[in-house]
Amino acid sequence: MLLLNNARVNGEIVDIRIADGLIAEIGRLDGEGTDLGGRIVVPGLWDNHVHFSQWALSSQRFDLSAATSAAEAAAMVGATATGLLFVGVGFRDALWPDEPTVAMLDAATGERPVVLISADLHAAWANSAALLHYGFETDGLLREQSAFDLTRAVGAVDEVTLDSWAVQAGQGAAARGVVGFADLEMGWNLDTWQRRRAAGFTTQRVEFAIYTQHLDRAIELGLRTGTRLDDLLSVGRYKVLTDGSLNTRTAFCSDPYPGSDNRGLLEVDPEVLRGNMRRAIDAGIEPTVHAIGDAALAVALDAYASLGAGGWVEHAQLVADADVARFAALGVTASVQPEHGMDDRDVADRYWAGRTNRFIPLRSMLDAGATLAFGSDAPVAPLDPWVTMDAAVTRARDGREPWHPEQRISFAEALTASTRSTVEVGQPADLAVLDADPADGSLRSMPVAATLLAGRFTHSTL
Image 1: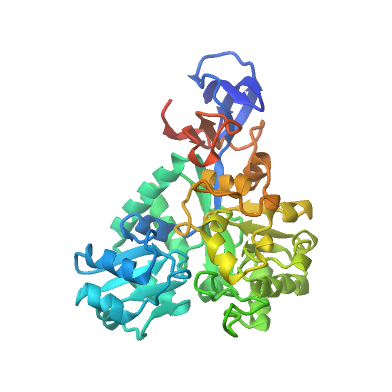
Image 2: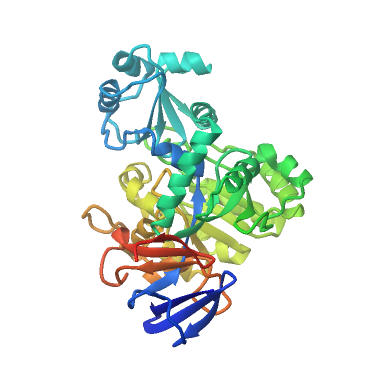
């Protein structure tokens, strides 16, 4: 039993009594408990798209996000690289004036193995020593599956160490009001999360994704979306990729990228996609389909239409006008990452010129009746729903003018897309206590005084 006194909920000062992990009473109640001093209480926040091991690993790796050219990135690494293997993260090469090559990286790094992972995770840049060690061949960047394979190889940290970093990442997320996330890491996540739960990971609820290479195994085990394996761990969705990414110019689009015939990459044959989705649906595993380019999104929505089933789409960065209304009509949730718009606006203006009014068109999608679910795609963007919501509400960052401000949405709408409960009797006692009013300043820097998960404090500065 826990009593929260003097909480501000929907503009009113109330007390909140919590019992058995649920909100039992709200009102002016008898008893003294934890005094919130009139602080605003909102539902605990969810990140609906995280690569959690990659997010934990990124905190231990060299940040290349400031590099404005391949030469600068190589120089930064050459001046810093130490140890048996050096791993950098966060580079975005789409606007670089020069081409990242193996020879360039070799000249800066010598014989020490170096692997650099792009911000969007869809490309990797390695020197000759690393390529030889891990068994890859290329003159430039590895893209898509080869990049995923190399990223997985360099992420082979011992379980104890990686899990300790995961605990730290969970604590950091709790400090931002996060009570749950969907982990879309590319791996057999059941064993990973049962191990972490047994070792004491208790800061968030976790839903884990299932990929095509593990679909048969999941079906044989009877895993079904929504099944709770313990009080915090649940089975998530079947994740499948239809295309690549914008920065890597592998997002599958209706129009070619400027100066080429390249329309991106369709990762899976539509008939194969439908067959795998059908198997998952029949087994009770809800699909979630990665689709960034407008042509890929059309393939994903067409698949849902042909199957007569709803599900989720991840990213939906470039949305054709004709597809905006299809989300609601088909019962497909748009799982999107608004901060990608702030990261990618210049890249999109170059490679999707004249079409960026359709870049994650939040306002249009909501007005058409779509259900939005917000996430970060961490480590692509920070695992911080306040950053995500700020991008959705302002469509601006770093003092720049809003980018397509007609697609902004309200804070209330953004909060709904970032939560899975409400502050009402009978709801889970998953709560965030704020040290400022969201209406008064930047959401991006919102101070969180406390986070409760099922009525238990996972973070507090009270």
